[in-house]
Length: 331
Image 1 (cartoon, rainbow, N blue to C red):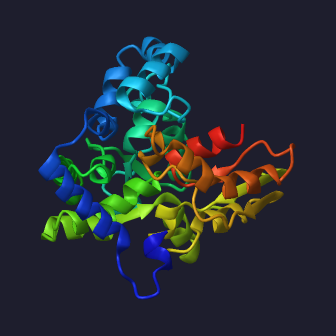
Image 2 (cartoon, rainbow, N blue to C red):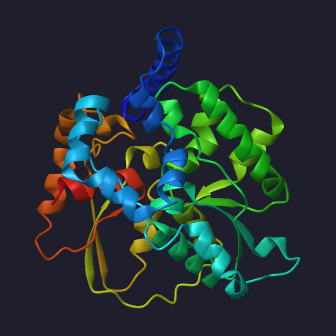
């Protein structure tokens, strides 16, 4: 939001991030921040035995101990691991059912799922694959790492560099072949497109190729619509859906493509939020000393959702951490 509202275009968020990295290099990084920065590692560990991991993380005693010992706020909206397997496991199990388009690279798309979809919300990935295949595209899901944003947010630039380099190595060849890289987490796609290259001073050809090939899923769908290629055989949905465009979606400077697509669905009424921020700010709102600040910042958005009425069942948002914060703040 600081970047968005600065009238002279000063990149406040980047200055803050570089300052944090400098402080971390001099003073070290607390264990709490190291753990919050390693979402992929935590996701992998928890997915070994999801029911046990969910109990260990979410019972009142462990949350109290995490708060008192580690500084992880006991009320913060931590995610739960999927108990029906990871997204990759589902993808492997359904391999024979996937759409194939042969040598036609113009009808292929690479899916960047991110950690949240892989370990916590595989249903997001399943829906994304269904949508892209319905549009006639073969969905390629190569090996990939966490985008590195949690590490960047906690000042661990060296570790984030390693993550980003691995993603470039896995994805750049597809981008060079003209295949778009489409993500369902606006935080991940912004990191691939802008935050990692800028903060880590990575301006090589491969990084730039990936940067130019990366799309948010609704941005990509809107582009299909502009070219007259989007299948709009939507079933009517008699729903009222509050929609919040999160800070990092706005940082893409692409407008609000999700809102444009939602408005194409017959019967669906999307109410746009003009709240400035949900307050979670990545891992910021998970920290004990920051939790109440995050909730106070998010109150503007929570109030907007509550004002839509008790009959509203769903709220739409492009960022998983914002969605979790929204769910938490409107309970």
